[in-house]
Each structure stands twice: as C-alpha cells, then as structure tokens.
Image (cartoon, rainbow, N blue to C red):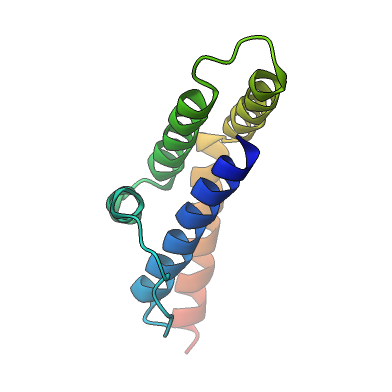
Length: 119
C-alpha cells in the first residue's frame, strides 16, 4: 500500500510541478509517464481561481486515493497506515485560515502596488 501511495503521490507532484512551471513560462520537461487522471485533475486545480478551493480539490483527491488503497483492510497494518495518512491530510486541512489568507494576499498585493508606483 505504501509503495502504491508513493507512486500516486509522486505522479501527482510531478504533474503539479510541470504545470506550475508551464504556467509561469519556465522550461520544464514533461513527466515521463503522464497519467491522464492526474493531468485532468491538476489542470482543474491550476485553473481554480480560489487557492483554498484548489487545495481542497487536491486533499479530496488524496483522501479518495487512500480510501481506494485501504479498501477492505480493517484490522491490519495497511488500515493503520492509511488511517495515519488520512489524519495527516486532515491536519493539513485544519491549518487553512481563509480570513488570514485573504489578509496575507491583500498585504502582498499592496506591497506589489507600492513597488510599481515607486518605479
């Protein structure tokens, strides 16, 4: 199960890095074995206007994959590892603070506007 998760997570991260670089206009070699599902989902994430919603899409996808991997395991190490990974995902979700994120984005935009006006 852990190796399957690592493969899934690696594929997802490679596609995310690739698409981020493409969006920023940076040269980047496409991942060797692109997974069509990963491409579709990461494209949706990259097109999401709200960063919080994009993160939620990724977390939902990861949670669903863990459900798929754990599937019929109830009382073994696979179930425990899957449960621990789900807790890590939920822990990540709890650190999202929409108001604080908006405030930080406003601070960054204001700083950029000041730099532009000082040019």
